[in-house]
Length: 137
Image: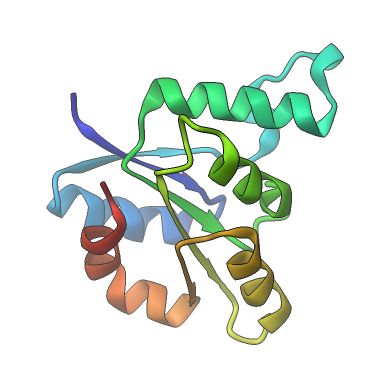
């Protein structure tokens, strides 16, 4: 089974950079650009149901690493990251977050939510191969 990195990233520029670095390290990538892609049934629209479905889907995919773009407003990362760190099937998956260096509040919040690594976009781009090697399991 190929090693997989799942990115909650909607920005095509960052998707391309992650994919390029991942392929060189023998990883495949999969993108979830918005919460709607999870196809959560309408009757399961509570945050807890959404988090349970997210955990179920990710445990089936068995990714080596999760990457969150903190600037992606289509992903409720503030609730998803802590939930993923509590779900037994996903809690050991490393979470790497990146965001704008001027959005200090989001960078700080991602750390508080349980992300394994939080970096500014500039560091993310320059250190991506090293970050993947360090955090992908």
